[in-house]
Image 1 (cartoon, rainbow, N blue to C red):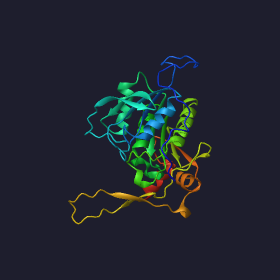
Image 2: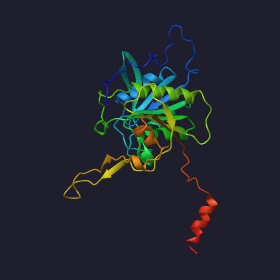
Image 3: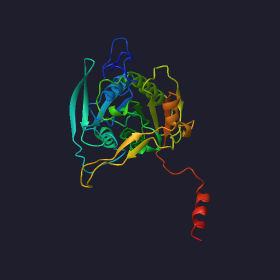
Image 4: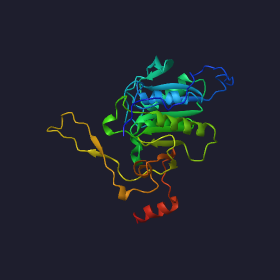
Length: 298
């Protein structure tokens, strides 16, 4: 279900760094520092919906890829030029100074932390992404990769994605309503800013159904191991013809784990919140695994 693009459900937001009448005065040093990025690029409406929502919580620095960078994962391409281009973007009549980065989402995070912010951010947010990031395929996601890069620098990190029809992936369509996803972005951002780190939780991955409202329940989930984005064999007559690998979404409800991210978002129509860890070590008994492996070599 698509909704007209609107910020109507967002609360009135504050211009970053400006003290408004009646607001408790605090310096920039007192306000939480939030680094915001994405993988859809600096022109994405999802990025600006997140920026406006987060500006109620702290001082937001926006550093996002200059180009569309979906599928970049946590990559650090050597071909990136690393140029930082300062721009002004108008959001609901307010001008924001932002930075378009010549690099991947993870590289945008690095430039933001190392060059643009006065200290380590209190929170790194990636999103709001056009399209859900689900299952063990999330290592492909530039949204998740950017959040993991923030976590690698010791900052609590959040990766937020909105379910949209596949034809809207990698677009800047204004037919998509990001207001509810922006609500949950601010909701979980405030939660992370106000809580102590939880052991072995480096990133919260949030996936919002397209028909969600601010009252939609959320629940903690695991990554599903069942395929969701299925690669499609390229159609071409000659191998040297241009034909990138495409994909299709396949959902087999009967095989889904009830506690998985896919089940929560696609079946239960709830907001899926998946805790992620930088530690990719398999959670097995290493001594038992060693015995298993050594038995195979005699």
